[in-house]
Image (cartoon, rainbow, N blue to C red; front, side, top):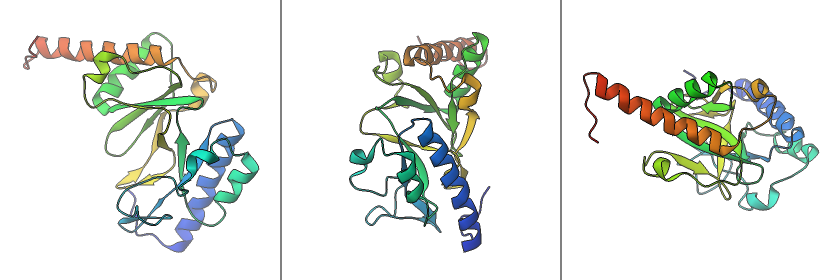
Amino acid sequence: MLDMDTSDSWRRAFRVELRAQAIGLAWRGWPVLPGTYLAGSQWAGREGVESIGPVPVHADWQERIGTKPEQVATWWTGRPYSVLLATGVTLDAIEVPGHLGRGAARVLRAVGLPAPIIATPDDRWTFLVRSGQKLARPLVEQGDVVLHAAGSFVPLPPTPVQHGVVHWRVRPEVCGWQMPAASLVQDALMDAIVDAATYARGGRLVVAD
């Protein structure tokens, strides 16, 4: 667990890593943006949002999507901004609770279809997919499954958050930087829901039909 009340030297060192990640992803064509960063118990970098984060530091962030890597590099020269991915452009993100994410990851591994997966310290898993598909009704009905599409964003590793750091469970290199179709990941998530319900019925818990 990271102590977020860190020294200036730690911030400078970590800013270098955040900047390197942002530049590398921008060269890959990912729409990355600088986000607010933890300073003690609050989020710094943009007035009015100190109690929530990470969020884009620029109010006009949607107009900055697609900024060239050279300009992206300048955003991280002064502060340890979070690295955010603007969704709904080339990539969407499906955010789920950890237990469902682990189940879907097992399904994807079993069929040989890895997908990039991000995890946060509060046990939320996010699957990166090609954009353009709505969330299937069974997933909407779960209530704790979120589709980040146009107008949204998600934090990318190694962004620090409360109680830890955003990290990769499955890196994009594993799938050759080719994002899976959203339908494949959604199918895996629905399979994981069925598997969990089946297991509960066969064990000590009973799930009502």
